[in-house]
Length: 366
Image (cartoon, rainbow, N blue to C red; front, side, top):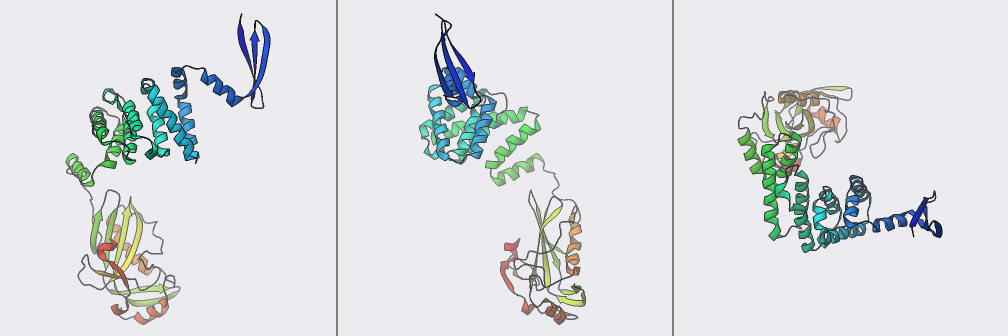
């Protein structure tokens, strides 16, 4: 006796299944395509099914679904299925290269505080068991480890040996690889968790003669600070008189208080300018700051003025910006009685007593 099934795919999301016994049709049934596929998957051996589900296409499908989906309960259910699979098929999972990637996708989305610590330890054991013997890229394991550490789900008993294994393998890999992209990934993973002072000390050892800045400084610079990403430059414009323009009206020798222009420069561009007034002859961290008395400057000191066109490849170019700002035509924007104030101090020194305090010190603003 020979039995067989004839499956016919239809255009309306249904599948027709017909049973054949000894060449004769003995039964026919119509199923939804999804139900039919589930039945077929149920007939597969565990190893075959796992290999099938762990293909790259399915990982990408899960990733897309989890990025777009909003039902946390579904993600928790998927996580529970993975946990159950870890209990039964640990050996199979360890040999699947996409297993770690799947876990990362799940752990980024689900509430792992609801996962039992014992279950999480089994996941970690299944993932990190072979780390010591890895010869290829370990950055995917570092990503998983950092994710687990962030979410606080590594128990104290398991934490130290797991971290040690990862760092030992990462160190060996860093010493042997010439792949710059891989080295960058390793470095970024370490820098995320490393103490800032330790990073600076290590960098100074690797390149002790590295020049932080090489070039002339702007005239009248009173403060300079450089970080790895940007520079802060403060230029002092002494108390004096400047020719200004209010709309089309020219005012000559208008008294101005002592001003500080605070520049934030990043990648050769001015990212922000703040202008404040000061009364002190000698600046210190506790010097009280005052609002700019004319127009186009917010109460916070930020300017309402276009400066993105200036390319600052050398800091000395900043010395011209304050005088370009002061000579730009003014209006009544962000300040009252501007015209009257210009007229009052034309050919007169500015009266510092009318300055309005900002409730900020020099230290606070830089």
